[in-house]
Length: 321
Length: 249
Image 1 (spheres, rainbow over the protein chains, first blue to last red):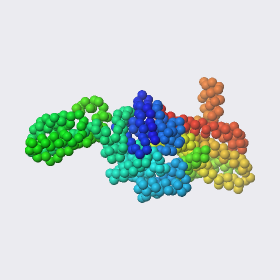
Image 2 (cartoon, one colour; image 1 turned 180 degrees about the vertical axis):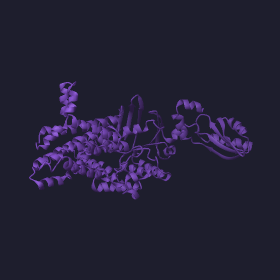
Image 3 (tube, rainbow over the protein chains, first blue to last red; image 1 turned 90 degrees about the vertical axis):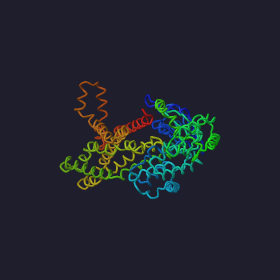
Image 4 (cartoon, rainbow over the protein chains, first blue to last red; image 1 turned 90 degrees about the horizontal axis):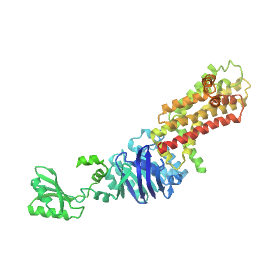
């Protein structure tokens, strides 16, 4: 539904977006990740036709966004960053305005407005002026605007920014539900959101795509993926480390925390294997040594760690080692 | 085509609603009417002239509009930029032209409404004497076109900046230039050093001679074209600025 080919945007000498290509099909929810200033919003603005790309093409439902913007824009619902809305209008007026620009008239318009008001829980503020709304409500008002014409494609720039945990949860559920029938791109800083909602994630850094895969695949790239975390009672940390590090399957063992009553260690596997093999070996060793094990589990890998490893500037990475 | 008209209308309706949703519209109209009355009767010497014409009424419009029209037009695009709603508006399935024209027409309609509310002065002059209503009508057309020309300039300056104050000041300066361009002190400034074509070019920009044509009751197509081309050019330039804003230059 969305196809982006070698997208480039330069602002003066700065290449804000530098050769981004990807595509999103119906039924997919694509998470757009990246540090601030990585080019997420700029990419989204090009996809939605707000700014023209310096190079490259955007196809929306087969229409070229530059050559044929009107039919392309018709298919998209867009929630811009910071959820802008006309502050001098009421929520009702604003949604009706959006519906009219989307070509909805009369009865259809009323139905569409009622539908999104219900979906986004705006009943209580419908006659309130936008500038008196709390941030969460204003956000949802703008979100409601983006789905008013039930578009095939949704582009959401930080849809959960500024919402409280309950509202975040609601919006995530909404996105996931809509993602079954639509093609959705959304950007976020919140990594658990990606795991909760996305079928695929792209990490973008300094204008370039640096990772593209399902959240599971991305997590595989983590150092922690397949590592086994173990908590042992009443044994000195050094003993645990040496004994576990000597297991043939293990690459190395490290002490995470050593408290008077327990030791928390993490054992990293050889290569990137993730089966339970390593955990079983550790269990055997502990049994043989007679350690009291309190906790033993294989870690899945952590997205935040992958994210940091990929997007930190190289100099910082060196210092962290 | 139909959808273009519908889009322009939707945008104009919202914009017009925006004026009346805040005190802006009411303050503007009240001030406009008060100043109109003051200029006409106190400065213009409406009664002293002892003639059934609205010369003293229209005489002050270029100066009155100089401050009031930029005040009405300064928010048109700068507000969109400040709120970020421009991004929302221009990712809707509409063209930038429809948005520009819709916004302009809404403000123009608002100014027309304010101007229409001066109708008591027409009634007064008709009550007092045998006024030529053709000339008065022509005067109103001229006044409306003048307001439209200033408004288009304000539209242009409001697209240049997200700051309404800057937008206001620049548009006042440009409108002042449009008033003074034909005024001898200004042309004398140029005559000494500028080539002939430049002087006559600057003089040609002056709105006053064209505005005066309407006040004499002459509907000259050249005057009409003059005002319409200022409007057309300014709106076109607004479109160029918005396009450049979007491509990030």
